[in-house]
Image (tube, rainbow, N blue to C red; front, top):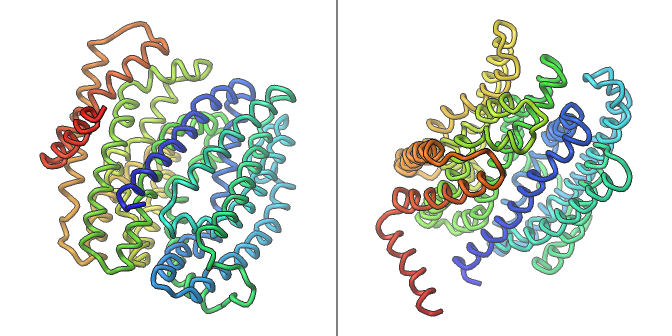
Length: 509
């Protein structure tokens, strides 16, 4: 399969996976909130966030292992690739044992550490047990997922993710419908999901990269230290992300209320999906960027980066603009039992960063690909400290409450993404400092214009708020959004090329 065809197939598969996850969030969230309540649902997100804190222990190895293994495989250095591969897997086993040792006493004394309503203590404890188990399964599976990355066949991973996601949906509806509504079942279903992923990752590793073997004699402390010396900066970056927005729910639980935590958890559903969409797009281009760098083809790498920025922009500003303008109507229909005005405001505060990150996020690939993680990590660590300091001050001197928790991190991130990320990406590639700014400002201008058009549509096309109305206005907005992006984001050559391709397809039929 050629590079371009691989890119298209990988992207289609990624979007299908994203669509299924979108469906899970869209249909399951209101169902779970309705059956267990927003307060209980908040603990699901809190459990996932707190287990993300544990990834700080593993990210130093796992975040760079794929990059090191991929480069060695493409350079034909199989012995070194196997050392990285085996050393990472064995290290993950050790990390898993550590997490279990820490997790057991935490769950046992949980009600003395965080605020948990008395009637929810047992269910929340069971939820955390399943979430910890899921984490252990996931990190054991992580290095095995490198097979589809090395061969740039991410669509295989996405197919498996689709299957596992559908199984997860069936399990949740079955458990909730035939037994009883219990947030612990969400953790159980996630465990089954991860087991399916692990099973197929083992198969992919054997079939796609048969030269990669898990053998104890490949274990190398030198390889581990080499990975750690590079990946430790991703640990710092992860810590900064936790300080920036990963502590939102925990801060809300401890400093505001469990109700506020639940509301913020629901409000962040759409922003989290937007973040997943960006990650989906970024991940599609990551293998090819790594391959370009392994071959020292900087020109090809920059060209691929600009293409990925344009694709990311094209697919992110339409849902972002639609949600900003019509989000209040969406919440009224989606979770009518909740205070939708608060949810809408919290969501807008949480999603505002997409105004810049929609184009900039893909540039973060460069720091890993070029192994220039130190300065990037230290910068974001400082940003994280600034974030939590501002939130703490605002909570103590103002009545903003959960609004301060939701809005500060994204506001600071807008400035950081606009200034630091594009400049440092250029420095890492030794190219002109303003190479990526035309794409960034083009995206921001296009998105601003799109917001104005969608606002006009809302004022002109007004009917009683129903799902039918929201779907119809959504389709109309999608058409306008595609046209705006087609005209304002693509250059004349790209528009002509795309037009001719569509014309060829029509003529053939």
